[in-house]
Image (spheres, rainbow, N blue to C red):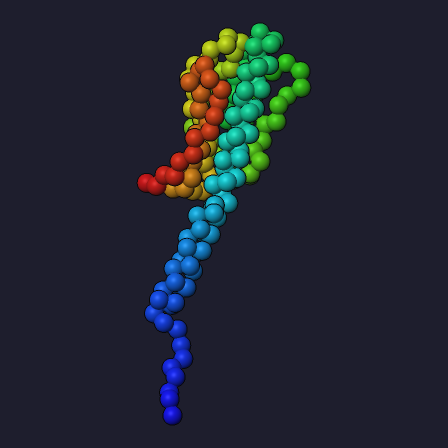
Length: 147
């Protein structure tokens, strides 16, 4: 009578464990933090609004100022229909009180507007900078910060 052993070899088990590890790693890299994504979306929207205000300022010859106001922001000096003044995400805040002057000259002063999220904005968490060197368009820089 012959006894046959049943089961998996060590190589088969290692291959399965390696495949599970690769799958888990790829899923964890693919998943992004929802708060960071919403904050980045608000930053991209603000960059587009700043560029629109800059273009309107140049076209009208009137300086436009952007400034944070509580949990929103305002554009001052825009002729005609105003641009949106609220964040897409209600937790988004502008950190600081910097006023940014847009136009009417083609080159404006360099500007950096830092956005954060609600309660964690002052301590840790994702931050987004909406930046322009004064010549190029506004763009978004994302960073993680902890204090």
